[in-house]
Length: 256
Image (cartoon, rainbow, N blue to C red; front, side):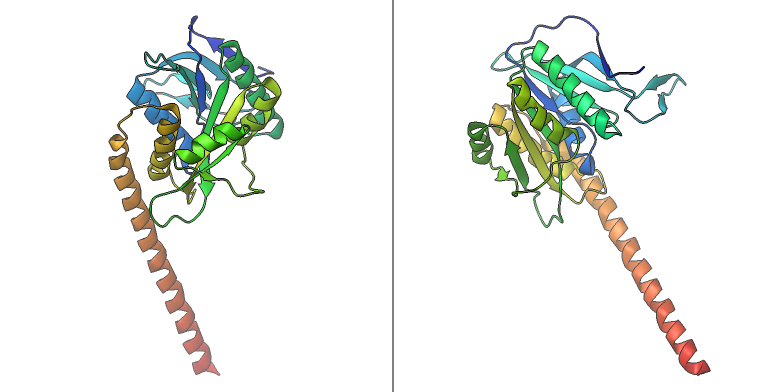
């Protein structure tokens, strides 16, 4: 395999669809949010994306079978509004060239399905005190206003949006597609379902989706317990280091 390819499982007819992207990234925010949408909407897979720019290993399932890393496109047909295409996967591209190639392929495929709006989801690295805020950036002023009315905050000037969430935004303009990015505040070093929930709240308001988000609460509780355990371990480590330093000072003082 020398280039990124997309293999469709069968023809799908979509009505004025919106593409939502959520690959792994900071705090896994985009992936958690997109996977939750897929689960709640019972969205169906219809295409796989493979790329030589993904990491060089395969995934082994419970039966011992292997598969390449991939991205998966899902669809959901909305009887009350615009259909959705949802894209997530195992990894982002690991090279600069790969990021651009993946973005170009995704946009080409989305355009062939009639997509004229792309929403990318991800994380915004920041220490979070309470409910994570959601920062927004867009290629369209009117779309940005919609996101701000949905409780998003304008992304700080000069803030880089790294990875596919940003590259898709930039490249969509060349294809005449509006694009919006939603970034949830996250510490970034652990999966962050709380940030994903904040992102989904804003997204649901923008797209007028009625989705129960309480299913994330158990994941949030688990994540917070894990974070508290890590804090306790770090506190013990700091106390241990301080004790060693104190003993070393006392030993040095005794010898001198």
